[in-house]
Length: 558
Image (cartoon, rainbow, N blue to C red):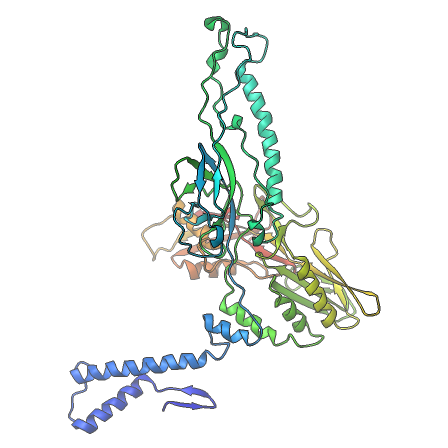
């Protein structure tokens, strides 16, 4: 086939065709008896030139094909979809609150004006890392003051006689410590609640961020020596004075993950200092990262969104509503369902049990984690707190995003069609009013998606033909959990909005990512302490999306 550009596109010669053309030209010049076998000097020279020729043609073919959105990749795809007004959703950083304990005045270097740089070149940048090796940079430079010297309590009068009927020094110390601990726990709980209300990444650069309470000295100083409460007469009826303990002070500072993208960091895992600074005693994160980053939108998802964008100019169609809302920068996923009958429609085929009212559309919106706040549903029902793990979360939309959604529904919703929302106080409902030209209000209504934690129990073993090991080590189990939730980036086990969870999803993910392992049993549950877990399909409501975390995965090596 000759090289040509026709109505069928760019056609190029194949490698055998190029080789035969070159061999024919050599024989025409030097005669038919020339040796052009593959192992001969002339045959090897033909292969070298032919390979160079086919490489150039294949490169040209790729450039030509990249003008088709469905075949373009990477940054070239970004250029193609931009012609349709579509922009790839960028990755974002994760942020964590870390407690830094010092025993003297310390100066720590932060990112300061380089908060958005992926690989900042800042000398002595204070860096810590978690158990999986993910590094975190200090956001802003800070000078931590020297902690005060605090000694354990002693009697005000050194010559005072100890009353045998009164509380001993050790008992008084322990009682006071218990009261202080209770108060500190209450203050820290209020701090965690305040952190959860941070609505965007930009908020982490402001000066009014919630500050973690300082750990009172009594909680980390050693208890008094019990021997002091023995026979008072042995020491002249008085309690000996105590030597002051080495003082320390804990400060809560904000750090940014070094790699961009989704990085899940569990509580009490950021415990190692990469940058060694004299005076820094320890580091620790008492809670999960309150703001998790997002991976860059993949080519496949971007192409699907571009395909739907052609419906943006449509009037009265579900695709038009979905495409318009999905194009908003603060929106991650949108689903629009329609019931054009005069009866309630039950989604029985997928097992969700959801119902939709007659002659209505049902709009479900999931906000982007980077541009939204994280909050629990409107009531405590349906939520479960396990330490820092919340069973269900809602990505609350910003006010300007709600106004844009309402405007789209006002312009695109067909006349006479209602807007259905789940009639339950535990569901997140978005409402917004728009003033019509006739001075009446149009009220837009939709559901905001709920992230529902999914819990897995799995029996996994090494395949007999893939290694000598017969059982999984604890290190293997930890790496498998990290792979399922995408700690190191890349593909992770995930579901789309309203998608049911089944064993096929788990099997196919493990076979792609870790072919040397074999799953022998998978059990699911929506509740961590459910008994028993189920082996069957786990149905998701239309406004739910299942999420995984490391603490929600149990792997038994067999």
